[in-house]
Image 1 (tube, helix red, strand yellow):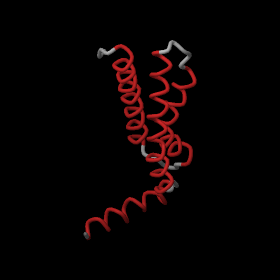
Image 2 (cartoon, rainbow, N blue to C red):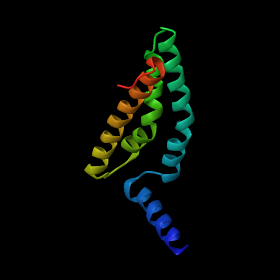
Image 3 (tube, rainbow, N blue to C red):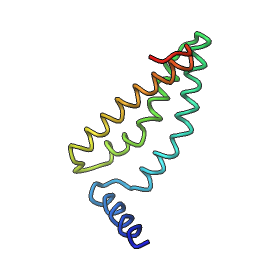
Image 4 (cartoon, rainbow, N blue to C red):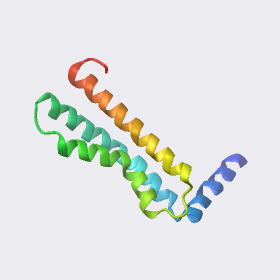
Length: 110
């Protein structure tokens, strides 16, 4: 278990280095997951019922990027590759979310 302590110390030290509390980041990341799926279900339901989806899509997107927003707003001296990684994660998230919406509303994939 020595490797776990080494990893934990390294991970927590990143918070000081980049001015981000890893516990807050992790809490936002994990805490937003159920809200993301609730909003995703709401979006799918609205599409099926031909109701407006703007609010539900905005909330779904916000839940998906909330932890990254915390990192971008609070973080300092974040390496450029982290921003690239966040951008790739967001692009992939948008793609996979639209794919899920399409499958659940039409029954077919893209």
